Length: 275
Image (cartoon, rainbow, N blue to C red; front, side):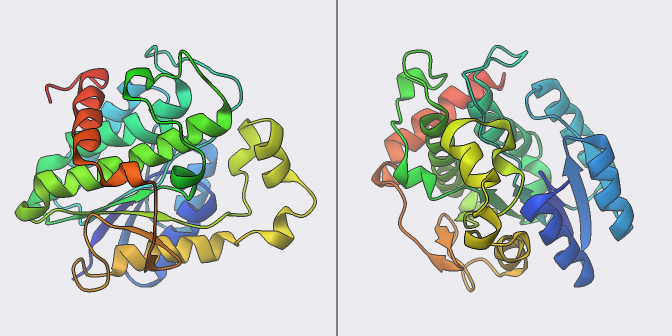
């Protein structure tokens, strides 16, 4: 049976690569991106549906969820792949720190709004996280907006750790109802990922050695594809974190259920949900 697979952040990078791989394997892929022209180009090349949403605007996330619910009676895989690393601390129109909102809060909200459809479909929810969740965070539940201490690297590490915490709490809350959640590190990908940042991130992703030293988008995309195609509990463990298609270590904080529960509750308030 052909499955419906929704991939956010699919207008380029590993999202676009995975969309092509899954489409070529016969799956029904829905391409979601921020940039209308790039999103339409990827979808048009594949001949698949597309939707546009800027995750720095939570109203657009709500519109995206409504459109998905209207169009698709099943959603078998939701790949929360959109994200980014940014420069100076910036507030969105929602009054929230940009890195936290785009990488964590927007996908948290989208998943919550699609929850009943995902449960009905016994779906997999895949979170594109990063090894930065273990390497760079200074995670503080009382400073999720980085008002007191900010750097682009720390903000990104905190957001990627939030992805893992969200994955584990999603599994704890809904795993017994058939929803499977997993997070993964795609590799250090040779893409435009760091173009909106400054300092070491911009040099790393845009420097002369980037293409030579980094993982290709096709390989990074294949890691997302592997999870999307895989059978939870057989090919990968729900609630887990993966790198190179193998279970991997992440921050010790990710294993603290109290932290995951508190992050969930605070995220629900920030996203305007009841809980």
